[in-house]
Length: 196
Image (cartoon, rainbow, N blue to C red):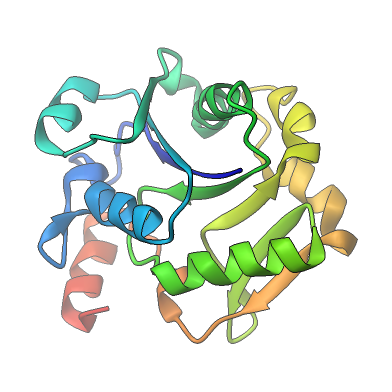
């Protein structure tokens, strides 16, 4: 069983407002990612919330998604990833499609490409690339879960992912959205101008 895991717990300090609630083509960032993962027919979707969790739950339709609250969200993204991973691991999930809420432009087609590549190759990690540049979301298989759950808060998931580079499957896609990372108001303004 494959699942989607969306990390939306951060304080969005550089943006100045919750990235999960920013508009992307008429939906919030979080809602757009949720709809994309559901359309890709993932068996489960978990959303990790922390900062302003109640406000986000009021604003976004999260029915059908498992909401995981990370009380340690101030310790960084790794703590949120681990909170979501623990929740999904207990449900017997075989791989997760990891989505960051500040990468809103993911498409159903890309998610399906990642899933297809994983099913064919059984690679522990599947990463989309656009014109040779690595993007998001990233598929991570269960054999890596224990190592990821053992990371300290100051270590990122890449610490583990890099160890498996030789076994990683890179999938070239014709979608620049995999590179779109909206971290601050300037990046958000550029995205709106480019109509990505």
